[in-house]
Image (cartoon, rainbow, N blue to C red; front, side, top):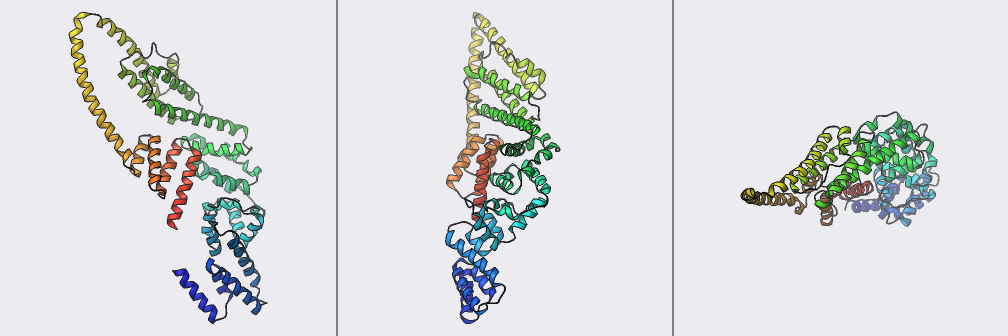
Length: 454
């Protein structure tokens, strides 16, 4: 409504008074009056042929007219015509494609400060708008930018990439490749070599993404390539542990021995990994405990003897993993001994009555246990059928990320515009090491949030 009133006001002024340069500029900032601005501009030239501002305004109007005629459906069109720089930067990220060099020159007529903004970013490392990263979509823009140093940007780029894995997405990678020479990008190797980033396990995901970027660009040095290999092994092991952990409750008893041996082999590989790996230790401790409980409750001989490598693992490991390995070994030994003793005693007739009594008692125990289990299952499944952010967070706290992911998928089907659900989905995908899908979910969350704000 305000736009129409402004349009009406400007039109009345044009009809009743002589049009000024400022009036023409204002007319050109609205798609509905852009053509009228051009008409008034032609009229103004005929009346004021010596006005020095005609040249600059003419270039801006010509650029706007070009994009209005050729990019009517582009997400950046309105912000471009309105000369809203911040919105233009954000909307450029929604455009799937690049503008050619001639079109880039037209963009610079409207926003001449773009090269200076990028130059300042590259020299100081201060990224005034995160949406600057989309400027790689303007072909030939790098020809207008000649920073005297890249050091500030590279240092902050490394720091943000490692501490916030979502920072280094595909758009940021393309920004760096477009505006930073490869010889300068290679200096990231030296920054990493003189840092302590890799001492903190919380930095592993960001560091891995950054090193993978250097590797794909063919500029990673030998030392950092070794670090990359260690981190890749770390995440491969984490993925394997996560997969086995999700299957521990459904594996058949006759397959539990092989399942346990796989876990012990992964434990051995983890112990041999020469980086901090407390998260892997925690995951392994949890799954070994679950295996032990299943063996104890099975009342069957699952192992004929303890696994061959368990003593070596006990010797090499630290607490609390060491204690869990010791208890697992003892549980395996006890299950074998107790089963043999039970077979011998069962052959004697004088304990028949006691056996019958024990069976009755066991029946009662099982009865109450079943009731308790059903109750716990009921409590556990309530959040699954109540679609809410709290339900997702409930399963995330239990590290049941696949169940949490299914809930977010249902929530998105129910309400596809809820950006908070996309954020939760991205966090879950990060935990599942689905990095690319997590990036897409974060990007969708950003788009949904922007659309709600607009």
